[in-house]
Image: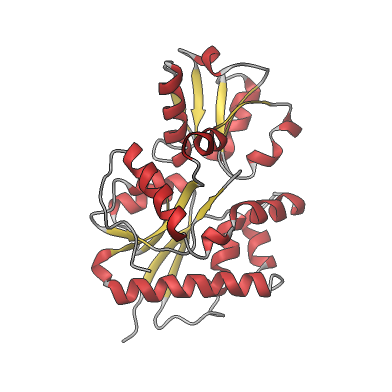
Amino acid sequence: MPINLTVGYSPCPNDTFIFHALASGIVDWDGELSVTLADVEELNSKAGSGDLDVVKVSVAAAAGILDDYVLLRAGGAMGFGVGPILVAGEHAELGDLDGKRVAIPGRKTTANLLFGLCCREAGISVEPVEMVFDQVMPAVESGDVAAGVVIHEGRFTFRARGLQRILDLGGWWEEHTGLPIPLGGIAMKRSLGEDAARAMDEAIRQSLLHARSHPEDGQGYIRFHAQEMDEAVVRTHIETFVTDYSLDVGEAGVEAVSRLLREAGCTRADVFIDS
C-alpha cells in the first residue's frame, strides 16, 4: 500500500546531496513525497508542531519530540571536526563574553546547546540573540553582537570575512567525550509504524549511495538551493558534513546522540529505529 509523506530538510549542500535521488524519483518510494526545504531552526519548529512526517532536526531539538518521532539511522550529520565554532571580530577569550550579546543560530540547535555547555563550564552568562544562521557573521561584522555561533559553510568562510575563532565547539565536545559530534538527524513519526520507518531509512541510504556513485546527477539541484555559495565551498561542505555516519550512525553514533540528548534533558532509551 503506497505511503504518502511530507518530508523536510534544509537547502544546505549536505542535505540536498543526500536527498536528491530520493526527492527526484531516482530512488523509488512507494507513494508520494511532498518535500519542504527550510532553515534548520524552522525545521525544528515544524517537528515540534508535528507538521512533517519525516524531518531533518538538530539533535538537541530531538530531545523534545521523541514521544512522537523516532530517529532514523541514515541521513544525519555527524563526525569529527565538523562542529560549530564561536567567532568574534577580534581576538577574544570565552570569558570575555560574560554579559555580552552573542548571536546564535536558533535556540533549539545543537550549536546553541554546545555553546551553553561551554558557557556553563566557563562560569559565564551571555545574552543570546537568536537569528537565522546566515545572519550571524554579518551581525558580528557590524558589531551588533560581540560574537556569534557559526554553523554550516561559515566554518570554512569566517576567516575570509576577517573574523577570529574563539572556540571550536565541536572540538570541545570531542575532547570532553571522545565521541563524534551529532549535529542533526532524520526524525520520522512513530505513528507511521516501524516498517515504514525502516523503508524510509533504507531509501535515504540508497539516495546517499547513489549520490556518491553518480555525483553529477544532483549538481544542478545542489547548486540551485546553495544559491550564492561558492562551488569550492559547496564541495567542502559536502565532504565535511556527509560522512559514513550519514549512511548509518553505528554504535559510536548512537552513544554520541544519547550523550547529547542527556545534556538536553532527555533520557529516553528508544531513540533510534532498530538496526
